[in-house]
Amino acid sequence: MVDLKKLQKEIYQNKVDKGFNVTDINQEFCLAYGEIAEAYDAWEKKKEDLGEELADVAIYLLGISEILGINLEDEIQKKVYKNSKREYKVINGVNIRVKEFDVESKK
Image (cartoon, rainbow, N blue to C red; front, side, top):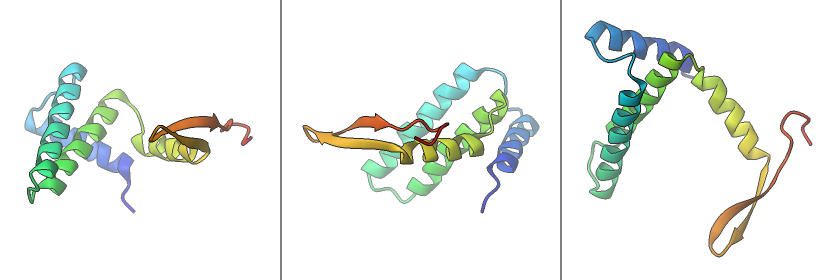
């Protein structure tokens, strides 16, 4: 299994070493948005580099997380658990959350 916290640090250090931005969070979010657009374009046009584009998205998310001091691995694990405790109902063809268990008390 990949250690995302370690990977965050490697991504951040690579940004520093190569002279990329590590202070302008607005810029980082805009660049991440651009990478999502590129991934969508690759998917839509059935390009062979879709995997690479998705990797770029993940790299930006991990980099932003490191800049902001957020352990993304922990946050992902908490969110996956939280999502598993939600109940949904399809209404008019759309999944709508109808119940969310109290994750803290496990109710």
